Length: 94
Image (cartoon, rainbow, N blue to C red):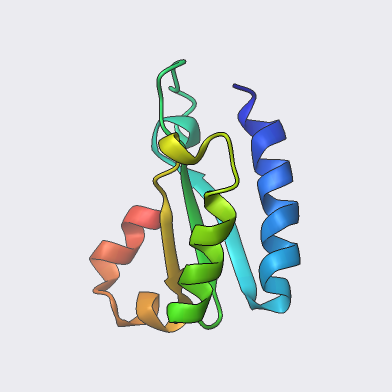
């Protein structure tokens, strides 16, 4: 899989879904470390300004439309939730 092509399309769709609520999109895991294999899952990091039940449902509904849905793991959070983490835990996302 060409992760850069996937992430570009993923980004465009998340921007359409969340508009200005999308603050950050990144990739972690084996793709983030450039160690991915053909069997690797995809671990996006999505940070939203506001992230409640409605946003999670919109995200899940979108994910269900993707052919990659079975290998998408990832992380979705609000910026306020991240601010509440211990600083040592937040550094894992850097």
